[in-house]
Length: 147
Image 1 (tube, one colour):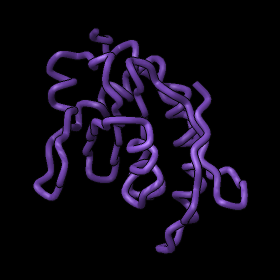
Image 2 (cartoon, rainbow, N blue to C red):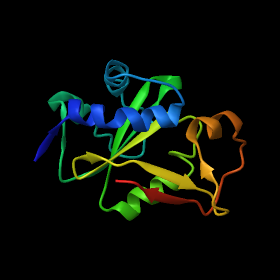
Image 3 (spheres, rainbow, N blue to C red):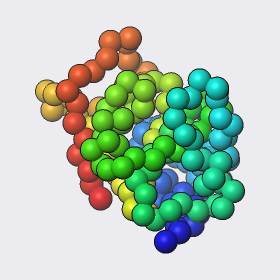
Image 4 (cartoon, rainbow, N blue to C red):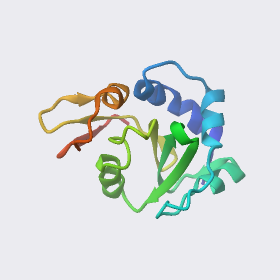
């Protein structure tokens, strides 16, 4: 089953606003999702060109869209299960990387809201983390899904 990208974008707005700390609209998100030029350094398959070409996502997949505003690049990654998705999101190359502007997890056709907490139980707010992060990585974080 195919889910229109417009529906995904509409569902993602509150999640993106929470991560970037400011209001955004569907037109801004549409523009950013079109930044899908593959980079030679990417060691994974970027599904964003496929998603843009059909303007929909496969409702049976587990996907993560990552927007990297500083170099105008957006990628969509596919995962076999939610555990793999969480491992990627908590790794140093996704949500906890200040180069990543925001992420949008799409699980079986729906945007899933989430919070990430440190091992001490402190909520990590993406835009605050990005402004204050150091080169030190944060270990043993956990994701709490809201959807």
